[in-house]
Image (cartoon, rainbow, N blue to C red; front, side, top):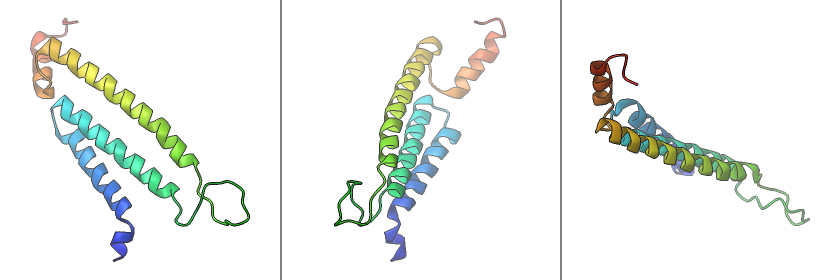
Length: 122
């Protein structure tokens, strides 16, 4: 049952693998953004897991406790979540603009249309 003790690590690995696969293997821009979000979530989970100490308490000086949890990883993850949401919002805005200009969000069709239009399209 040692695997169950490290379930957060396995979940982070699975989310990272699924997210990376979605970013690399999919041609749909929306699916790529979902994959990026999954990958970012895996990183968040990994950092939160590493930052938590079993039996640790908040770093408030008290003679009753000897083990303290470091709050820095949790604070960094809060900042990273804000950056992640902002990145997703910009990506979705770009996907909307691409859909409006090209009529599709499929990467292959966008490349084909650019190749057909020639180098003078701007």
